[in-house]
Image (cartoon, rainbow, N blue to C red):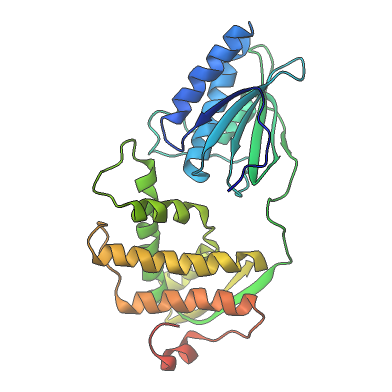
Length: 306
């Protein structure tokens, strides 16, 4: 994947590793000391630590930290190659022990900066901020200069008819835990030499694909608590999510192979959970393509996986 974006003269390349946050802090500290802007070091190092940690968790690509001197106040940029949008909400991860994350997440960036925002950068994005001196009151405004790297189409309604409540609830809990185990592989400071390259690649893709299928959880949870046998779930997705639906299906299929091979700690799922997952993802693809919903009840006689 090409970056197709220019970096400032002062830039540092970092891997998607939890230790990159501390490297970014040291680099920014040294740059500001060289520029004799030591009054900005505390706010700048805290903010860059949060943004690099966020990129490590969510982007999972090479990261660059840059410093621009176009204005009176230096601007610090954090670049990645992810299409994911960044939102001004807290981001916390217990898995990152050396990121300086004190639980305030992205809110801390707002508190430590004069202004900050996000803009497109080649195939990914640039999250930038202007650090605030200690005598400047916060919080700053979030400036989003693009809505999404992907073109956005009109919302599409997806209905899962006659959803088997108990089965889908158990399936969802299972696949959430499975996905979490796989994604945590990428957050290990040291890679286990026994972990195959194919599992590392699988973990990276899991973190890049948007799990749009995990919505409507409150409706499902309420139906489960009431002991309902079946219910109808309603989602809103977009045409550009179609490829994610297909890829996530294939990723789970591959993950289940690792479970059966005992590469992962998670046990392989029961056949009925695999079947309901395939039906769920298949319905997203079919209805994005403009086809009418096929209920779980009607799908069952077809047998096997959809």
